[in-house]
Length: 358
Image 1: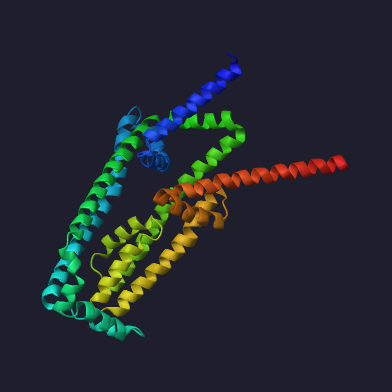
Image 2: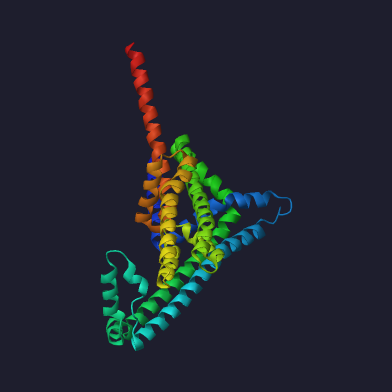
């Protein structure tokens, strides 16, 4: 069999095996990508620790410690948030139970809302103002739909937790073998696609790292700025609320869940000015951070124009969900590098043609 035919056969067989492998691992591909993203973002920390004389020849323990630390950083705020959510659900259940027995009249501040105040008060009283209206409105609570939704939510949570454990396991493996894997990826890019392919790979990795760094900076900054806002609004535990907001702020617009809930609590207590002010302050801060600061931090690291960074973030999230927050800017960075190389090539060709014409 000729050599070129053997090469084609090996290529086709390898491609088929690769596709079969992706099909087998299709349920875990997202978890594997998350592990790679976390490893790239935290690799400078791991590399710095491994070079210290105190930790030399203890790379396994460094990898294990850093993996557990990352797991704790993610799980502890999440557990705290879930605890607050469960507490609020219990309070809501008690409130609804009271409404079914005695009704729940509209709060006084509802009528003071301009333009829609009278309509809002009337609508509230129609659905919750009396025990009969509340029972009619909340009749679906007595059906099995709530139990079904609760069971579905618990199953989804357990599935996500198992995937998170898998992410940490793969992350630990990457820490242990990351040097060799990184060298193999870069060497393969150079051999397959030349120096330009090597540069594209570096740009993609840089975009991933800068996206994670920008996410952390945005989360930290928004948490620090929202903490005083909670304190001025008169909420208890403003430090804890600021930490929780900073954690959710790493995801674009997710911090709205925290300060919007706090604003609703203030409004329900009759604090119209504080609740409205906190919501406006949070929305303004979120719009500035997610639409201007975050794209600037990411784009400056890879020399990516602001508009393409912004489109990469939101387009990636729309296509791939939360994972697209990292993959979108990386893809835009590679496409921009290809575009610049193409423009340079055309410029050189035009210059060569002009010299020949002269």
